Structure formats: C-alpha cells, structure tokens
Length: 128
Image 1 (cartoon, rainbow, N blue to C red):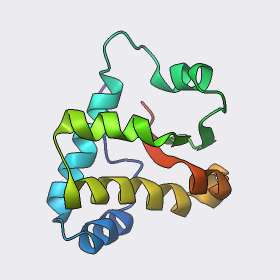
Image 2 (image 1 turned 60 degrees about the vertical axis):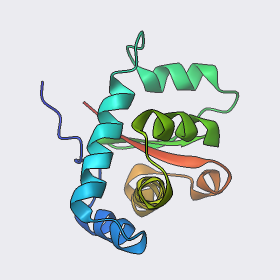
Image 3 (image 1 turned 60 degrees about the horizontal axis):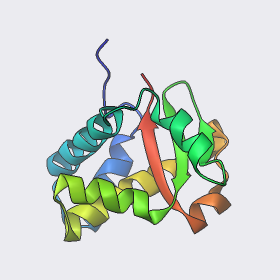
Image 4 (image 1 turned 180 degrees about the horizontal axis):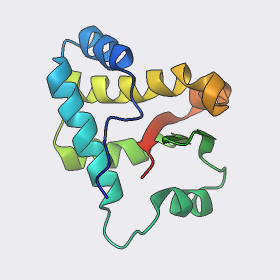
C-alpha cells in the first residue's frame, strides 16, 4: 500500500513553516517525506506509536484522526531523527516547526491537548 507521506500536513502550514525558517516549501516537503519514511522504517519496529506508548512514562499520543497520529515526545527523540537525517539550522527548525504547527492546527478535529505540546516536542505521523 502506498501512503502519501504529506497527507497529514496542510499546504498552508507547510508553507508558513518553510517561509518562517527561510527554507523552500519543496525542500521542507522533502524533509517531511524523508522523516515520515524514516520513522516507519525503524529497524525491528512494527508499530512505532504502539512502542512509544509502552516505552514512555507518559503516553505520548495526544490526538488522532483517520489520517494521522499526534504525539508529544521528549526532545531527545527528535534529536535522533534530525541527526540521522543530517540536518541542522534552518532545515531542522522548519521540520520541527511544521510538526508543531500542524499538531496545534489539528487540535479541534484530533482532540489534541495543546498543553501537552508545550512541554514536549510535537510529532505528526501520517497513518497508513
């Protein structure tokens, strides 16, 4: 089954995060696609959301829709992802910003508890 890696991200949110961080929309879209793929392809992990829900002391799942999971994760999780992707600076900031903004934008439909996003890093994961 083919998944649209950008399905959980609104075009306007993507454009705003790119613009605010001086990264092209095309480059940010490519980063989002790569990140989504990397999360899904973690070695030895069948369902990363299930794994994170069992691993972390506080359940990181803060909302969901048919198309996406909305998670609040410790910062170190993001550090591992951006390091693996080899990005820093503006690209790193844009990638984290698009996830945070999308989670906050999706709040009503997904039931996201925005207060949880204030203490942890948002991660939006497109559902298969």
